[in-house]
Each structure stands twice: as structure tokens, then as C-alpha cells.
Amino acid sequence: MIPDPIKLLSELIQTPSLSREEEATAFILKSTLENAGCPCERYGNNIISRSKNWKDEKPTVVLCSHHDTVAPNKGYTRDPFVATVEDGKLYGLGSNDAGGCLVSLVCTFIKLYDIDLPFNLLLAAVAEEEISGSGGVSMVLPHLPELDLVIVGEPTLLQMAIAEKGLLVIDGEARGIPGHAAHEGTENPIYTVAQDARIIEQFEFEKKSPLLGETRVSLTMIQAGTQHNQVPAACKFVLDARVNECYTNQEVFELLQQSLQSQLTARSFRLNSSGIPADHPFMDVVSALGLKTFGSSTLSDQAVIPYPSVKIGPGDSTRSHTADEFIYIEEIHAGIDLYTKLITQYQPR
Image (tube, rainbow, N blue to C red; front, side):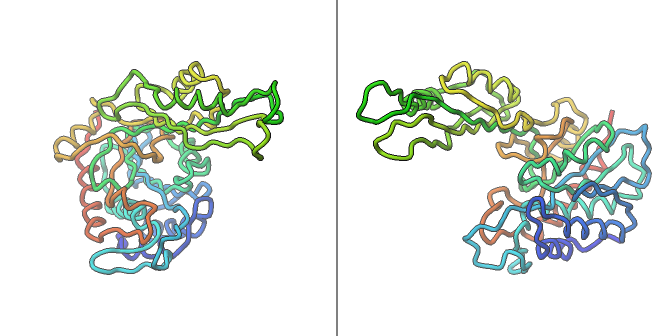
């Protein structure tokens, strides 16, 4: 029996599930699927379920969305953990990002569970998406076969993101010769970073993408000094790079290090750009349904999925992480309808 998506999402909203604290919502999702006759596997706080007519020789399509949330911000005027419906809107933390997508995918999977599709269908309700944690989709992937396609549920106004920028966070440090500000013989690392900051501000990556535009790097944090009369020993800063599909994160890091005096250290190279090839057969369905496609600058689980992937779902990305977060109830029903069409019309080559 297909659950009521609004009741399911209300239950999830009222069950706190901050990243790394998703045990209770994992239990709800597992129970919901098993009560509908869909056996599950659990890896950490990740729940997966395989379609009834699973055959190892068939290609595999994954429906993936997350059940963790960010912490509620201080601007909330409602209780973020109370689900309320007003004027066709369901309010509550995680309703839009990405609860509406998740329950739409759960209901779609249950509806199609018994159908013998030309591919295996797998549902993945994952944890730790908001922090790109190792206990999320990265924990699930080793238990899956090679994947033909991953449909990631994120709020996109039901438009199809066919590419997504990667993220590279870099720590930088310039070292100097500390001493009293009134004396000779010091070397101020703040000046070194100031020179590097000008280079960063004007830095241009040559390769531009028709979908994702240019790769961009921003200086977002800086720290140096503890008192007015002392030249500091070091000046530290942080760079945020949004990387198009023309570069790997490693290539972007190397280009920046070659151009700057400061020493750079990448926090991780794992969140690369992602998307789907233009000639992938799923794009025939996208075209047939007349869906608007775009390249996304926001990060999702796509970044750690090394297979063809798209991002689409009910809700609006601009509502994510905002106070008094909500999703329209009609958006959820439209999401189930569209996900069903995307899956049933897909024919792998």
C-alpha cells in the first residue's frame, strides 16, 4: 500500500534528523517501506530497497534523496519540528530540502516496486547529505552494482539539472617573520596574502562550460594577528572554488598553487562536478517530456556519485535552509507524477 506522502513527510518533519543524527528517521523510512511490502537493507542511517524483479544482468537505476537536515536557523517564527498545513503549504524543517523529494521518490518506488521494468530500480534514502559526510551515499555505493543512472531528488521546481558544479575548499597560509611593529627585520604575511588576494580576485579559468559557466574561486575567510603592535607569524585564509566539468578539482588546485605565493592545502578533492552525457538514453525521456534543463551551481549527493546522474524534484532551492521552510502540497503530488513518467518511459540501450 502506497503511504500518504503528506502524512509521511509530516512524521519525518516531527522527528529531528540533523546530519549524523538520523537514526529515528531511518527507522521510519525502513518501517514505511517494509509495511508496503518492500524489503530493505540498512547501512548506518542509510536505507535501500531493491525492486521485486531484480536481476543482476539488468542495468540499475537509483532513486536517491536524503533525510538529514541542517539545524534550524534563528529566524524561525514557527516550531521547526512541528508539521503544519496552511494555505496549501506544508511547513517544517526539511519539508522542502529535501523531504518533499524524498517522500515523492518513496511513493514512486512503492508504486513501481512490482512492475517488471527493463532495468533494476533501487531506492536509496541516505544520510549526511548536508555535510557531504562519509556516512551518507558514500557508505551505500560499495554495496551496489555499477549504475546506469542515478536520479537525485533535490528541490528544482521539477526542472532537470543535467550538470552540477563541484566544490573545492582550500586552506591557505602565508608565513612571515614576526616581531614588534616598530622594528626592522620583520616580514608581514598579511601583505603576502593581500597580494594573493588581488590575484584571486582577478583570476580567470580559461575553460568555460555552456551549462555551468566558468569555474569561480572566492576568498571567503582570513585570519591573522592578535595585537596591534606585533607583526604576526602567519596569515591564514580559506578559498571556496566552484568547479565546472571542464576541470577536475586537482587541476584547479594546481593552477591556483602555481599562481599564489601562499601555501595551499585542499581539504578534499572528492566533491567533483557531475552530470549526465548528452547522448545518454535518459535524455530522450527528458526531451520527450519537454523538461527544462539547466546546470546547477549548488552541491548535492551528485558530487560523490561516479555514475551518470541528474537532479530533479519538487520544491524550490531558494527555500532551502530558510526560516519557516515549506513546500506546496501540490508540488509533492506533481513530483510523484513526474518521477513515475521518467522511470516508466526510460528505455536503456
